[in-house]
Image (cartoon, rainbow, N blue to C red; front, side, top):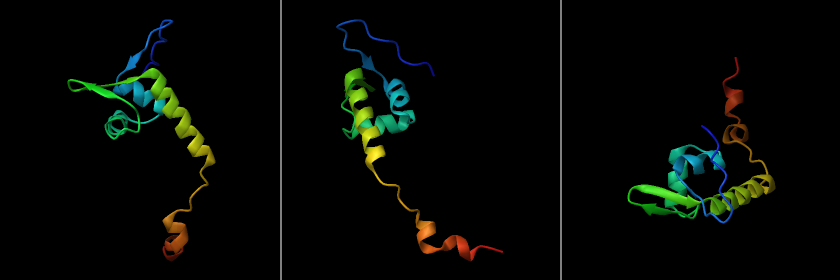
Length: 88
């Protein structure tokens, strides 16, 4: 998928679900879920979701900061030792 076009000076660019998904690095379905639950500020025009480019960039920046700050979690399998029981 191509990157969204750059807005002209003074424009408030509205992005569709595919463009939001591209910018956040998720699939289109996940982007719709995030817009519907309010994680990404957006609104509907008929059946179509739209979000302002500024808002999507702000959410992407916030999510990337959270990902950097969050410690790596240990998987359930390594905690319970399930892998060791399947060794031959």
